[in-house]
Amino acid sequence: MSLDLQRSELERFQFQIVKDEPETLIGLRQKWYPDCLLTKITYVVFIRKVQHLSVDIIEADRDQLQTDAKQLNPSLLPRGFQAGVAVITIYIADRVDFEAQSLCKQKPKIRFAWFYLPAALEQSSSKTFSLKETPLWGFLYYSKFRYLIRRLLQPTDAPVQEPKSVVGIVFGVVLVGYLICFAILILAL
Image 1 (cartoon, rainbow, N blue to C red):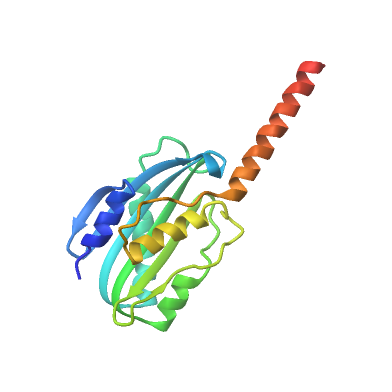
Image 2: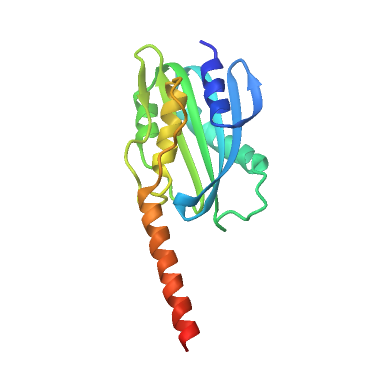
């Protein structure tokens, strides 16, 4: 299986393809999210075909991919100043070890304005392995991450309609309301 379907999905999501090899794709996209308190997320997506996915492969890749992601991040905003980086690794494998399946499903380590999410498709069984829950740290973004991961693991021709962060919208409205009330109080003094 080639990575043509995943490449099409990345292009549909308006990713810039920065590496395109038979076994590896790397895509880059920056996007502002008004529904996430006006945050700019830089996505660096690595897609790899491997025969047998193990924890050793994921851990070895994580260190290298995070270094690569820092070099690929063209944002002028400092990380954390309404800007974050999401490194998403998609593995297309013939076989996925149980330990690798578990690693793909577990919550990522907490890092400031930085997310690393591995996910895998085991072709022999057509099963996917990825984080299903929403960690508290960065909860505004996980519906977007999961949607992108699902689309890359199992590409579809459906139009791209990223989910909105309802909690982010509510927080945004409350924050704007608070700022308006604060401005009125200042002007009244």
